[in-house]
Length: 298
Image (cartoon, rainbow, N blue to C red):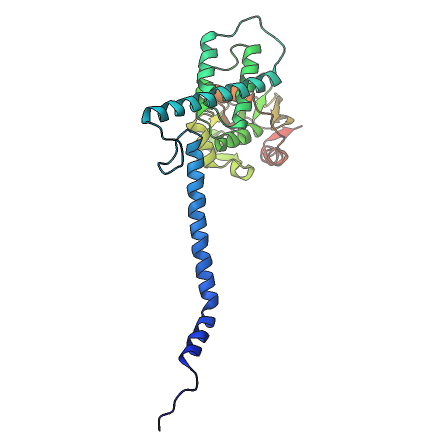
């Protein structure tokens, strides 16, 4: 005797449909999400190109010949450049300083500045360029064209790295070029010739300046490509430093002590003037703890 199921085919289909419902909803949601992301990506690409006066072929715009499109693009480009210069002028006027020299601005420097500044679109970088012009117009010769060329290459990420380098910078009294002190080492004497080099240095990565960051600054020409050592320090002389916003004096306890540091280039030193540095208490504390083994610190 054949046993027939009391459940109809329609009922089975209905049950299966209900069972697989959540999976279908999820799949549909993922599809819609992918579709919306794709459109969002397209919109983003189109928006950026529109700022350069370029639109996709399918965009609903008045029919134009290629020459007309190029002309419209160039007009938009020149308007944006002019707008950049207007904003930089406004920033420069906000930063204007008292005249300290009678020398007039070098016209070659000025028009080179204009040619570079008109392509600066970021509001943060426009502020930097405005400040540069304000300083240069008041004190001609403060910023070289080489410095402007380097600044033109800086991305916002580079600028943030450089800001942290300036935050950690030190200057010995009477010196103008900043340094980033790492620590010290003690030169070998005849009695310690066979001992390993006695070196005591900080890891700058602990203070938001990693080795890749340092390499980036080196490649940009903002700091020199290798660590530098001072000459042997006089163990009877106190040296005065301004270190990361703190005043620190120290005197060697022994002979043969040498400080180790990264030195800013001329370009790096010029650009460092534009940054209002912030105190770095943790760095100064760690540096003192490193130096106190060989220096009297006050």
